Image 1 (tube, rainbow, N blue to C red):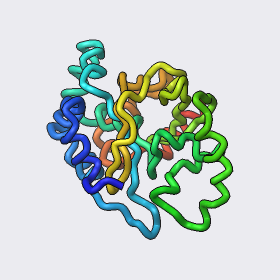
Image 2 (spheres, rainbow, N blue to C red; image 1 turned 135 degrees about the vertical axis):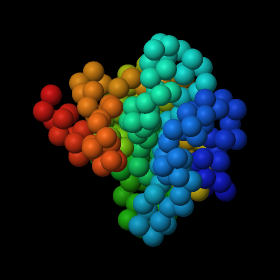
Image 3 (cartoon, one colour; image 1 turned 30 degrees about the horizontal axis):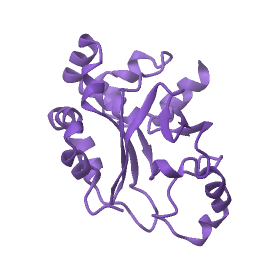
Length: 212
């Protein structure tokens, strides 16, 4: 693991300056999440953050970028869509076919030995497809590797800067901003204050996704 937090990683990378500015201006709670030390006993508090680079933000339609710059809840929902619990170094995807994707490097416990067969098989693959992992909204992200490069959402967005390690997770620099699913209702993307106060919408989003 790295010596600094995920927030330190973001601040140290010039190509993440837009993401840092957006979080600093609107989401002190998300910044705190990226700074918090994990619980090494329970393995909680680790995050994989797929970070849009500066060019990714400039490629957004101006009206969408303007909304994200003024609507904190819409920005929070978008960033949670880019975040996974626990830690997933991109060279190790997929750790298993059952969604167990945190790194044995960070958690070298006997209970993880059964996953070695998956690691031994998949790490030798220059390309793979079909891995789906839940993000922090409870929505499955499609991950694949094509010619050695990790991609999200059917190769539409590439990881250009992988495996920036921190003591509370890992960051991967993305070539684009992942689009929210069309089925994601506006009330989830930008909920009213009464719902926004509830924080994370994992259970709500799972129910919505199951119903559509």
